[in-house]
Structures are given as structure tokens and as C-alpha cells.
Length: 612
Image (tube, rainbow, N blue to C red; front, side, top):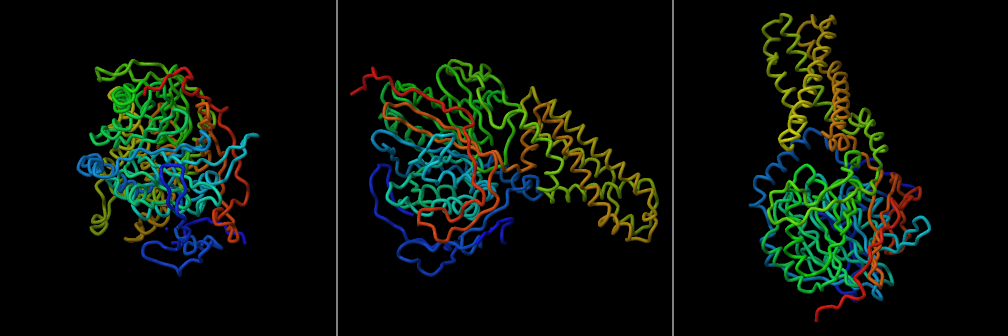
């Protein structure tokens, strides 16, 4: 039976850091959710769904987040403001000092290890599950290469959107990943899962994040075993490789318990070892506009990692929803945020970065080095082409945004019409002061351009574009008013003019206003302003990406950047599949490709003598 999901219907087992066997725990109720329990499962495993009914799946597949929805804009803005203002009071990292400070080990098999990296994943069901489905496959054949499933899955941040809470994690992250790998692989080792929080995971002070990824000793998400006890972690990998993942809490600072944890972990690192550093955000890119952004990462490398004598060979992050790689004389800098969230274009990425920036105020910063942009996905040409879709995608993806603009413009039109015509006393009661509406439009346009968040050098550009956008919207309001004044309806008995304005005028002017916004976003993007909003408003789900990495026995690390040009939007239930096979498969096969040839990073030098 073919089940096609178009819209939401309303919304495993133990292991350890070592490659050892664990007691099986194969019984799970797939409908257990928020206090609703199904009948006990069969001893052989959970009952597999026969449709995409949320009551069978145990979660509610979600639409992509509409980032320009008025209530979401208000809610996310308030949560972001509260997190910034009171984040220090909600910071649970200090409390994590009481939790286990285990340093994990993933030795792989015969000195080799396959592992995966994915970030920015908990958005719409189609995109999130498409990537989860590929990650859960026993192997992927990509351009003639057979790449086995990772023994470790690394989630690099923003595991849920738009804000963190239990229901959102269940419906947008845990549910899709459990459906992709319901149980540990039959006859094989159970893969481990480690997650690093991003800014969206932080909006509730990490409460829901820690509950899902670090709370229980028998924690699991489907067939993946969660091992960590804190929001940061260190893992010893085979062949002289180490993984360190730091939690910066909105890029502010690294807390003392976290530094102590990594100081203890670094005692096991030997001179000549290689290190992969995970960060919540690609601060090496953001430092091009904000020189202080990279300070915390640089401090960690200088004070914790450099004294070990090991080499930090690659930095990996998500947060920006595309793939990009910078290369330098000492390391590779990866951004891979294509796990499910809306696509972000790459057209404005700097061709060269200086890291740390020479403008940083940190007096003891590391020597600045240049890193060149080697590859990006999608390409700049593809990014610009996708950007032009803003005219039809904004009103289609964000109907509430068009409605809000329609209401604002209708009230402005009534105020303008009232200023040039006479009305009765009752009509005057419904009149909105014209000056007030003009201020609302101009203030909204300027704030939308985000001048407060821009650097001092860029702020005038933001203000100018915001003011131009405001005048464009006011011009549209005047044009609409001119048309309205030509209609006989304005002379009808009150309140019929208001009724006609609400039913007939508001939808048309709202759609026209979204086109003005779309034109503004395209123009602003040319000047590197509101680029994120240009793509967030469109909610493009295609062009996903993740990394599949392999450490060979000789220590060579190979990174395979995998791209998915088009996700699946039609899913077929597999009720007769094995316990460890996906509940749903795509109606058409998902096609993967290498974004660029595999990146090979040599392992530790054979001549390096470990310190006893």
C-alpha cells in the first residue's frame, strides 16, 4: 500500500563507549508518546506501521518551519532575546559538573572506523527523514564507492527547530530517526550517537536536549545508542585520532567545568596525534564580519589542545545550511549543515579567510593563517537561481506573513483614505492615525534589515536598505489607496467599505506586499544583507548534505561529502520489513553523489614516538 504524506495529521538498546556487546532490549512501543501506551509489543520487536498515521508511527510528521510566520517570528524573537539576556542564569553547563565526566572510546574494528556527521536536522519530515534514511542504510554506493554505515553518528547542532521542547524533539528528530533505524542492526554492533547542541537546542537552557541525549544510561534513539552525559564530549578514535566537541552557549564562552573536563581528556592525547574539533557554529566564517566570533575556539585550541603536541587537522560545524570547505596549510575547515533545515545559499562566502582575524582584540591569539575556499554546495550560480524563487515561495510557504502584510496595508489604506476624504463619526472611530501606520511600516522595514546586529562598518548599509524597503512599502500603500479612492465602494454606507476592504482589498494588497518584500530581499542579498531571510522565507528542502568519514588502520582519515540534490516527498510503508530496517522507504530511490572528491588527511607520522 502506497502512503503519501503531504501535511501533518493534527504533530533501543544499551551499549557503551567501548566496542563491546550489550544486553539486548528489543521491545519498544512505537505509540508510546506523552502518556499514551499501546498494548505490549510482540517479544520479537515492535509492531511496524502499515501507514503514515501518526498513531502508528508514534509521532506527528511535521511541515517545514515557516520562518516568516508572524507568531513564530514573535515567539522566536522573544525566546532569542530572553536566551541572550538571561542565558547566563539558564546555563546548565555549570550544573553538568555533577554528571559523569567519561571520556569515550570508539576503537572500531581491526583499527578502522566508519562514522557519520550530520547537523541542522530537526525541521520538516521529508528532508529530515530523507537524510536519516540514508544514514541508516547498511551501506551507500556513491559514484562506484561502497561506503558502510557509520559505527558512530555525530549530530553537530540544531537537532530541532524552531525551539527546543519535548514534543518538538519527538516529532522532528527522535521520531524520524527511530523510523529510519528502529532497532540495532541484527548481527552487528550497535552504532553510537553523540550530539552537540546548537543555538536552537539552547533556547530552553538545554533542558530538553539533556533529557533526550544525556539523561539515561540506557538512552537510545531507535537503533542508535546515546552515550554522552553532558552537552560536550571527547572520544578517542582509532589510529591516533581524537574527537573533541565543545559547547559554546551562543558563542559566549567556555565554562570552567567544561575546560576541566577537556583538560583531563587531553591528558590521554599523545604528541603527533590528530584531532577533529566539532563546534556548534563555523566561527571561522562568521569571524570575517565579527572578529570576536572565533575567540572561544582559538582559546580552546591554544590552551587545551596545543600543549598536548597533537595536531588539530580539521574543524567541523553546521549552523549554516550548506556545505563549504576551506583549506589551509595546517587544517581543513568544514561547514556541513545540510541535515534537514532550509537551504542557505553560498554566493556570499568569502573566497579567503584569515583565521584568527587580525582584527581580534585577543592579545594572545594564535598566529593568523589564510584558508582558501575550495568547494561549496550549492554553487553560487545555483544559489542565485534558487534565490529568484522567493517571489512564489514566500507567499506559498508563509501565508500568515502575507495575511499580516495585508492587514497592515489595509489599515494604512483606510488611514490614508480618511486623511483625504470625510467620513461620519462612526467611521472616525475606526480610523487609524496615518502617522502611526507610517511609523509602523518604516520601523518594521528597518528592523527587518537587522541593523542592530550588524558590525559598525556594515550598519549604514543595513539602515539604508531598511529605509528604502520602508519607502517601497509606503509607496505601495499610496498606490493601493489611489486605486481605492477611484472605487464607488468608499461611498457605501458604513461599515460596508470596511467589509469590502477586509474581504477584497486585504488579500490582493497582502500578496502585492510580499512581492515587494521578495524584491527587497533579492536586492539586499546583492549587498550581503538579509541573505539568511532570503532563503529562510523560501524554505527550500532540497540540496541536503552530510559527511561519511573513514579512519584506516594506518591513521589516514578520508572524508566523503555526500550531497542529495532532491529529497523524497512520497513514502511507502514497509510493514513486513526486518526489525532493523526503515519503517518507510522512498517511492523513488534517493540519489546521492559526492559533492567533491574524497578529502584525504594523513594520519600520525610513523616516526612519531608516543610519550610513555
